[in-house]
Length: 453
Ligand code: UDX
Image (cartoon, rainbow, N blue to C red; front, top):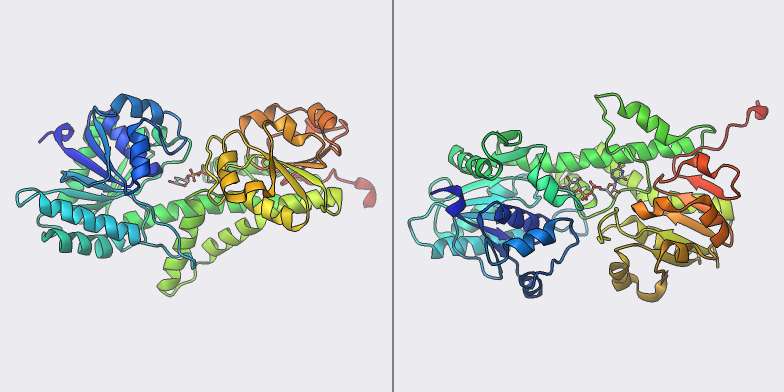
């Protein structure tokens, strides 16, 4: 059977599932997208995407009803991708209930397909090492009455796409990791990807054990999070070393090819749906095996403190924050998304409210999501300029491009008290020199004072 004539079912239509399903459909595959949330399926059937992701709406419009069918029931298929969520429990360990349910439902669909099929199941969700072999395999076998390794192929195939560039990352990944239960399973998945990318354009591909593949995903995210926490720690040092600037230090170390320039942007910390959850899960999983991972734990600890740097810097300029009007520019956990999961903005807002400040915020995309959580506890502005009007301090929380257009003069004219805390290093400090604005930034030391020696 050719790859394109195989039926692919993607179970779980979050970021990973929707992007995977639509990218396969865009390349001529026959794809069914399944989600238990009937409202979500309705919306997708009406060409409304539940997420804000560049390029995805165009693919949806082109492939709906042609290669892509959204539904609530898992049909019998040749290939099943599991892309359901794996949220954190209170102790940081992973809640596997959606993985368990998806495995069972796929087992039932395989059973309904009858004897003469040999489907492939692929776990794309981020799961602790051992989950594919122990949790998924047992459930699918029990429900289907068939055996993995005999009648069913099984692989772990972690996903590394970033929000905001999910389509681009899916079409041009740095590598593909295939964790195979057995050789036949790996061959089938490699063959599927060769059909998707073309044999001569296939990205580098690693075939390994399911456990290595599962762990690679956690190690990857924990390493990137560590890189950011590391530069944020250096940023803290820069703030107390006159003459230091973390951006220059980051550039200097980033040009060392062994280190690399990416993920060395100091800021107010990392958030989003993956880094916090995955670093916590790695720690919890390792602890459950008897080892407390030191670097992953410090990575998290540095990140928990980082949003408070913005408040400390604001206080050093303003004194008490009580009854002060603080303008926050940016609410999304990063630019070009409306996602506020684990967003630094929420931590800063909660601390500012605790200190008695009046908070006004603006974000080009995320205000509706923040309103759902915080309601009228803060006020919202329709533009960056409206947000900074009459403010005592402005904190740059997310590095949206439109904020980079603001000039020292805008702050000087609009604010009651022109104090700017650049939490994402979007401005050049020299542009603010002698402009009448008190400019502070993450990772920026004071001017060196030679007279004190
Ligand atoms: C991440 C991983 O990059 C991706 O491979 C994985 O599949 C899911 O998690 P994402 O959460 O979309 O993707 O965001 P990413 O662009 O990686 O940024 C994560 C966080 O780190 C953001 O809060 C961002 O602001 C922060 N960050 C990133 C920094 O503070 N500095 C940097 O230099 C880079």
